[in-house]
Every structure is written in structure tokens, then in C-alpha cells.
Image (cartoon, rainbow, N blue to C red; front, top):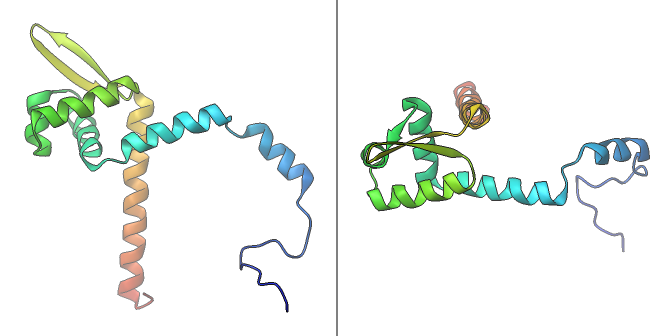
Length: 135
């Protein structure tokens, strides 16, 4: 009986050693991969994602304004911000008794912008395919 081979399996050749070696030189380390996965897990929560996009749009907001914008409790926003601040995704500044939060840097803004663009790109393509009768 013949073995079943997956459609994406390499069946016709050996690995390209030069390509594999060149790729390995630029691969993230296991520690970097772990830290990246942790950051993406933080971004994977819908409430935290809404908070980040609110900060992207507003620039800077306090907890009570964020809670109103994303329609969750102050406590939930505070907890989310604590996690995001520990991961250096958001930063804060104190003005008297108020604390204002903002995205930590341009890299975070770029990641959010690119993520939204990627999401919209996929949605637009799906919509166009359905209109053309391909879906």
C-alpha cells in the first residue's frame, strides 16, 4: 500500500541547503520568538485591541475616557493598560492626579496601521470575489 502524502509535502527533491542556511542566519532566536508570541497574545484580546486603536486615533487618553470609548469598565481598562504598559506597548504620563496613556512608539503605531490595512485588504478582496461570483 502506498503512503499518503500531503499536498504541501516535498516529494520531488531534497531541501535546498544554501537557502535553508541563508534563512537560518536571519531567523529570530527562540527567545525573540517567545517574546514576539507574548506580544501578539496581548494584541489578540478584542478589548485591548480596541484600546490600542482608540489611542492610535486620539493620541492620548485617560482611563475613564478609554472606558467610555470602548464601552467597558474602568477596571477592565486599567487591567488591560497594566499588561500593555508592562510589555512596553503603551506609555503613560502623569498630569496632577490624572494619568494619560499613549502608544509607546512609532513601531506600535506602524504595527496597528499595517494590521488594520491587512485586515481591510483581505475583506475587500473577499467582497470583490463575491461580487464577481467567484465565491
